[in-house]
Image 1: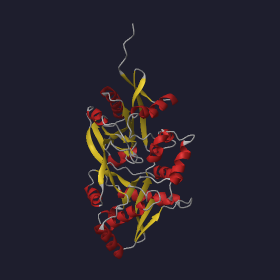
Image 2: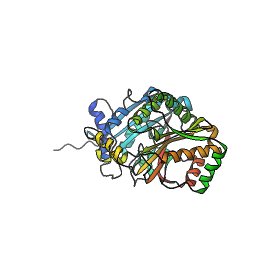
Image 3: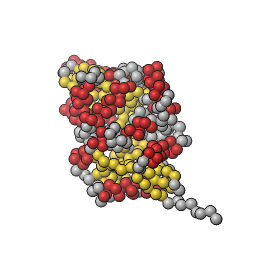
Image 4: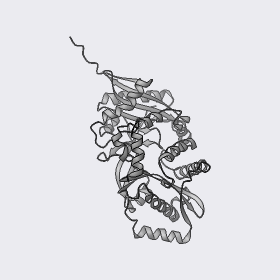
Length: 386
């Protein structure tokens, strides 16, 4: 007589090479039939979870779990506490992230329950998620826009995830949006006149980041100062640290030219920053997550010889004192113009501007006047656990 299958879900901590391999490779099985999923580079994902490679862990702690059913991995998740968030908001809030699972309510219940238990034992009374790992990484669950692949450093999820999360008592806390427009479409007469009027009153200058060894540390600190000032009032804001930004900068320094990141100067003072990334997802989709032995060669060759069809304005900020002024609008428009001319995207068909808080009505109105439309919506959920 054949023993009955054990359909119960077991959640175990991720420890050792075998379980970490299962943790990172689970999405490949879940998304195997999704033509719009882009397999991430496994080596990048692996290092992202290692404290000595990710400066996030200098101010945070996390736990990592796998869900097993009949001995097979069927789900994964992290729960984390960002001490900078607690210092900023004093709200006893932790996060869950990197949630992936089969379409089974019991798997979601087991994973989220385990995360809540760990967070509660650490003194946390409210959970936000998915946030992977924090708001500077990949916040939110895709809830609209499943029919196209994600842009670089943006998430992609399966449609049933939202209902499985809601079933566990979570409610929507905030939406973050991805806007899109034609990369080659001109600004239009009204915006061009606004720019020309501003130029008659003040001196605006756009320059690329300085990447030489002597200047680079100072540039990173300048960018950090501008971004933290520009975003300080945003929902869920946590200041980005120098070490976190330096890690990102070191990675981009390997594959991008200085023109990809623009610093705006207003009457000689640095007041804004914007970064336009080529959508390298177009170049890595067929690598199946493998960078070695030939994936790295293919990626570098494609970056050097091919034009991307899309780019992403992944970072933009103007110091708060100028944000609601006519000069601030001119600074933002000039940075976008400069980014459009970068070598990587000057022949691109579309440009994504993300992410944008759904509650940020002034920016949304500006983007809509700029000819942008929403192409993806991501949602962050919350739950009280104390």
